[in-house]
Amino acid sequence: MSETRIVTPDEAELRLDRWLRRQLPGLPQSAIQKLCRTGRLRVDGARAEPGTRLVPGQEIQLPPLAPAPAPAAPRPPADPALAARLRAAVLYRDDQLVVLNKPAGLPVQGGPGIAVHLDGALDALAFGAERPRLVHRLDRDTSGVLVLARGARVAAQLAAAFRGRTMEKTYWAVVARRPIPPEGRIDRSLRRIAGARGGRTMLAEPGDPEAARSISRYRTRDHAGKLAWLELIPETGRTHQLRVHCVAIGAPILGDVTYAMPDQNGAFAATVAGLSTALHLHARALRLPHPAGGTLAVEAPLPPHMIETFRTLGFVAPDPRPPRRS
Image (cartoon, rainbow, N blue to C red; front, side):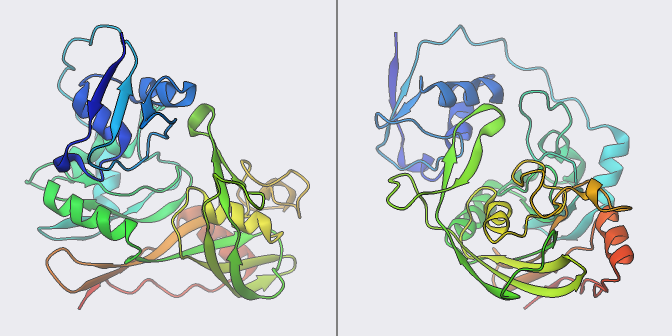
């Protein structure tokens, strides 16, 4: 028999998947994604994505579920090599937060077929305090600046800042065409299509009721033949926004096998001799309101595959500036 539960005021702004894990300890992320994908779970009578932010008073209808599994065993320690790699990737830390240069290829959270991920190794970044908490995410294949909160109160503050657009994010990408004009603003609405592995983001048609306005700014910093180095600044925060917006202007990100068509301007790095086939998208810089006051600015060095591509193409990237709090 289905059950309806009400979101309480202290649960405001929680992601749906995190709310479910609080309500149903032991429910795996894969089961949560399946409930959302199949529409068996409803929020105010409608389908919802796992990342939906909840509002007090909303009704969440839970379908009949199998008996809850036994309490989970204590979380195993992170692989020592991964733990050391993550600690070496820390760009900044204080009593409020930890800022990490997330390696390319490391998923932030688990899911079907994902056994090794950042969320499972966060104990390695506790540094004698409580386990830090995720407040935002980067795609598996995107590297760069990622912020972790050291405590529930800080997590709530930072999550609100990300939703409220008070963060200033800067990404670097190598794309498979020099965009014309060389700098500009992309204002193309997007919609999320549910499906396996979290679904896909698509350009929305005019009048689509599920469309979400999405805006990105770009600037060409250098070019070599048909390839270009772009600086990208998302003004909104849609899933895969930059990747789809780059495709929309005919300049797909190098190595983006998810969104670029195989023949779109040689988007696959395999068509460019000597370049890595990995995704060339890097969260270069983040400027954020610090929970204790003031502003923190952090920059991350490029991942190894992008360093090699820059060297091959003759792009000269400035060294990242040290973290600055003002």
